[in-house]
Length: 347
Length: 104
Image (cartoon, each protein chain N blue to C red):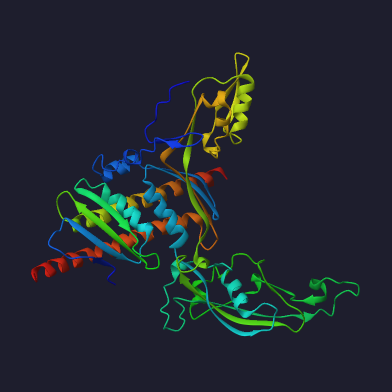
């Protein structure tokens, strides 16, 4: 068997264990004094995919604590606008008031939360902190329906209430501010309730600014996650039938087979595609010929926005949230230092 | 808002526990990680004393110097690091978007 030398800053994946997780060394904790210049030299970033909904990017050279902070802030601390206060004027539908309001709360709307302030709960709504929507819908018989039609959507009108029925009620000055981009539900086809003739829903909804920590309806991401870059190395040539087995042990696109002097030889093409299933370790002959691992400081981030803000803006906002935390505590350091001196003076 | 406090005030300024209000693992672990990089720090750890209270305790023990200074340096290092990540991210994203626009 080939002797495996552990690599620096890489975790080795075995069939039953992960080894060489020398975290403190890999991340330089304690070994050397931290300097910003070193960090600047080490940090690398690249973008794989960036649309309004999806973002995949790599951060290389940060600590897991930092990567995790960005991920956690994305899920729970980047502010968005969501339905928070609902005035139910009339609800004669089958859905109970509590369920109806809950469903409304989970409908995301497209409004830039950065243009709003947090609302003081004691103050009335103002155009700086609230967006108002109305939902007023009544089901009736459709008199124009064909004689032989039986489907509710044909014989009644407004038998299904969709998020698209929500209408924006601009507060003072908001019409100008949002002239180009009026607030509206991100999806128009979310089913909210079903009605029958004579039933009616009438409500006023106030959207306020909040964070995912308070309620999941404020969370701006569907998922935000990261994984470490897989490392796969072939230590000894794998040929013929074994090469095909090797290829099938990994995810599609990881291993390809190339002809070398008329022999099929397996070659690692794109380790990034691998899910780290470790299937290859089930074949005793192949297990000896590969080394599996993960790069400890290479984070592959994937951020999927719900749609209130583009995903790359969300990442920028999450970093700003962290900067805000640092600033708020740094501003208090002098106060704490002074207090301590005073307390000691009294001794 | 006073969200930063010292848990016990005593003569010794090399060992201190700080209380940070309205924070959790998000800041706690990142801050711990930055403070641990300081060679004057002997130990740094954080805890959430009770799961239904939104506070964290950050304990700093120094080899020499003041624990308040180490906390300040920790926050400064974290801020500088995040600022650099922000700038790099902005550059990377705009470069990517330009490239995509060129191809279209």
